[in-house]
Image (cartoon, rainbow, N blue to C red; front, side):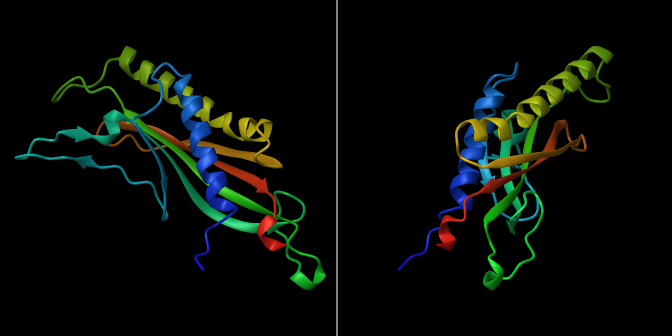
Length: 180
């Protein structure tokens, strides 16, 4: 028998789909790359290098990613349930995720700094993405995919190599269907 996660992966996939839909509503639209990532951080790559020439740049194509940071039992969401199974736990599960969006920022040329207008536009686009991320929990609840949610902080990422973006923490409360 092969065991397939009936709980966490489906809600993570729904979260990614809703994130993509929300980003489609921004001025820059949905990024090319939508992915669920394992591990402790989202990694993007310059890929498809031919003879030292980069043929694809995931940063400039745009990446939206969802990463699970932890899963824990909860009886009073978003608090962790400390009860043993013999004491009635777990009631539901909390799935804590990081939503990340990374895109290209202004790159005017070698040895030139972006203009004030370019930097302001980059900040506006970055904050539009943050606003789209903030709506994901509400949309999941409206769809009936989760019981409740808590949107945590959005933090901008380090501008690196022309890539800009940010990460938002989202915790959702889901059924304990696998526990029955």
